[in-house]
Length: 179
Length: 179
DNA sequence: ACGGACATGTAACACGTTACATGATTAA
DNA sequence: TTAATCATGTAACGTGTTACATGTCCGT
Image (tube, rainbow over all chains, first blue to last red; front, top):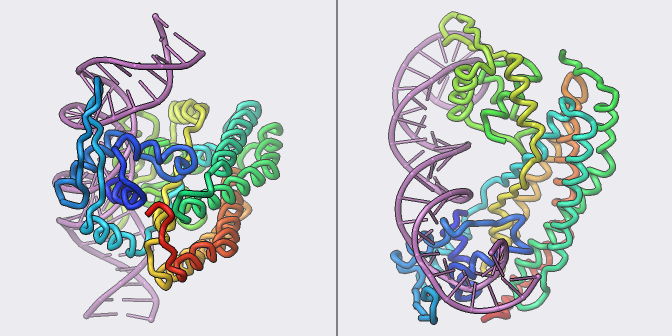
């Protein structure tokens, strides 16, 4: 699902400006969804052109007009259409895992440092997922936040229980079997 | 970590052709890392230009030369340099989760179908992670495969235990609070 | 006869990020 | 005075995918 479609989806929940859509992607959802202004604003422009949303500019003193976008009936249909397609594969791109893949090349101290920091980040993500409000939001939000909790809990547990595999290896300076 | 660096990393494990690097990314690792020929071949070309790898073309009958790449000492240094940098944030882009976010817009049957299929896919991924060989590969490989197991197990459990939240909602046809 | 594995490579395209451009208000 | 929040938008850039181009061998 591209940003354009995702914005359209956000507008099924409530009317919003580009700025507000960006904010909705923070806190509980930022782990899974993210977008920059540079993609949101053009996306909203295109949706307006295509008649899937309407735009009302509200003048504000000493600021650019706030543009409130609302989804149209055609917009709802188009979004549903997109939503009914079978979702594609997940893509879990992780620089952390890429680093762990080559952990045997790293100094022991640095390795431990990287793992410590990542566990701390995951704890942070977990706390944010748990802070997800339980009212006034579609059920899907809670479901996704819960998914985040489950995944991050599992990741933390795994890292804590298995980090020694990499760390003991690093301390021993064991050379690779392949070399 | 971009594809170029990742190829360099693969070559720290053993010499390989572009085709072989692509194959190394299948099976246990494909969940986390992936790359197309369209990115691998140009990457190897650039690495050769930069002197980080060398290339030996082995003629084969009735086939294009097989080009074996080997990492150079400078290549190892460059890769280590890259590996020592703190890894950036994970990016978990999931069309499935994007769909679940708006689950309340979907017909109940379709929703169940999507969840069923996804659970089946995760089971498949889990089986592949478990099939990861335990010998002749760097310790990091096993660690990453184990991470995959942990994550996919947790995801399956979560989906099985919480899918009813979305499904009962869909059956009831409960309208959104926000509307 | 057809698809898949082997083997490399290029070009067009899609998609999103970062940096730039502008500017007021408010809290530390 | 420095940064953050509010508020929108464009252009350059990076990075990777898909499709195209070529051709053999092997199994069913």
